[in-house]
Image (cartoon, rainbow, N blue to C red; front, side, top):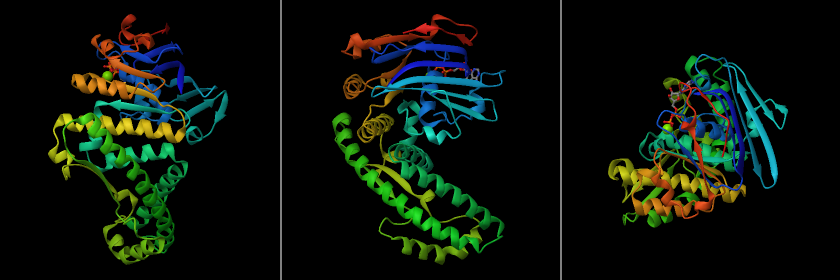
Length: 370
Ligand SMILES: Nc1ncnc2c1ncn2[C@@H]1O[C@H](COP(=O)(O)OP(=O)(O)O)[C@@H](O)[C@H]1O
Ligand SMILES: [Mg+2]
């Protein structure tokens, strides 16, 4: 998978940006001072994978201040097929054009352009709250498994309706119907999570030993709120038993939204035991695994996006990571300094994107070709 062009108007700090990407390049270095829009550019590319900012920003905050709508566009090539996707948002509605055809739902585009972002905030996947890990693995597994994606969406919709009833205590006879539907979906979600996490865990252990050199025993455990051994009937029975408790609480006490994933080092939670550097490395490794596993299942190399992460590592690890990413077709890497170039031995594939070349009060007008 290779990006060929990026265009945007009134997006973040860009009034207008247009970049043609040299298809013979591989390492695209986005070089500029802080605050010039490096992360904004990666965020734009990533938007076409999950259709939201990786920084948890509302769409309306992506519109250039003072303007009414943003428009972003990418052209990319995958296995000889070229796609052109345009998304515009006016604060109210999103308009999507794929190869000049209007699409009604972003989900029609899901899992088409695949990128993986590596950012300093990835450390939250290791040390943050359970919901951050759940969201990360949800996005990871959704991209490689369309049934999982649809189960997660349906689950969230039913849960919302059920919670409404539990809170307002109206139409309580519907709870049983929802519980039956939820039992089926929870069973599938739990089995799918279990299946993927087993694979991710094996890779995590191997990769951590390979890159970590800490002689530490690491692990990932998936702890479902309803054990993976339960069949649909047994899940439903438990729901029946807990019905009164749920009505008293006013919200759902059981289900996939309460599942946990934990990262361990030497049998203890990473967040309580590992050093900051070890947590940061674990975060980078989990993203490398996401990229590698996604590439295998989708049979295409995702575009990698590195936002200020490689430089923070020590020299040996930097080189090891650079070695791990050699197999990918295309990556965009933000840097504020020049020394990174020494890291890559494939110098002929390095291309520069210099955002400092024009500066219009932080509102850029660019027309660069790299
Ligand atoms: N909606 C917006 N409109 C205008 N400027 C924005 C908007 N959102 C963010 N910015 C600006 O973008 C800049 C940050 O860009 P960023 O990509 O994070 O910089 P960096 O190059 O350090 O990664 C800041 O100056 C910020 O004020
Ligand atoms: Mg940045």
